Length: 180
Image 1 (cartoon, one colour):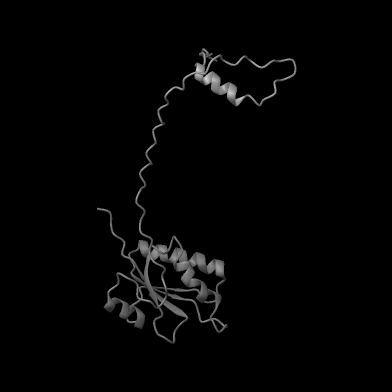
Image 2: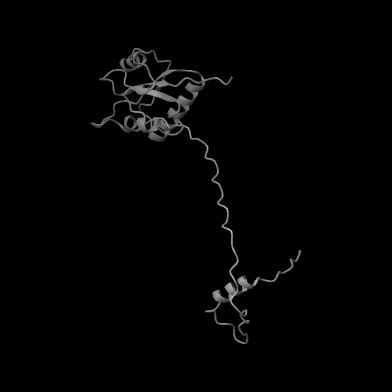
């Protein structure tokens, strides 16, 4: 281990140290060191330079919350009308009816990721209406699942194919842009 050489304190530092330790009682058998004589002139201390903040990387815009049945921004009216009326042909269908919540969520995530990777644009997810007046648990959870961080970037819009058919949802997926 390398030892460093001690440097003597300046008079102002020594005076400051004695002022700081004035209220401290020395250990038994030890005496207080002598304070420096005279009042030293304070040395000019330059203020420490303020470090510059690290540049903040711009964050990607967060997509607004997806609501089933509401036209999202960035989607033309003709395409939205076809999706909402059920006139857009569904390229794939996932039937979640009768599944448990955890199984249905995992199946939906895998289904949408696979469909997006394959370049599919329109899919249908069948949740079933459910026995309760508000609908089943899958029907209630689907909007939350579509707004999850891993699925929201994939989904452009969602709508029921017919006003009376609330047990199914047509989902329009975003186009995948190929790397150039």
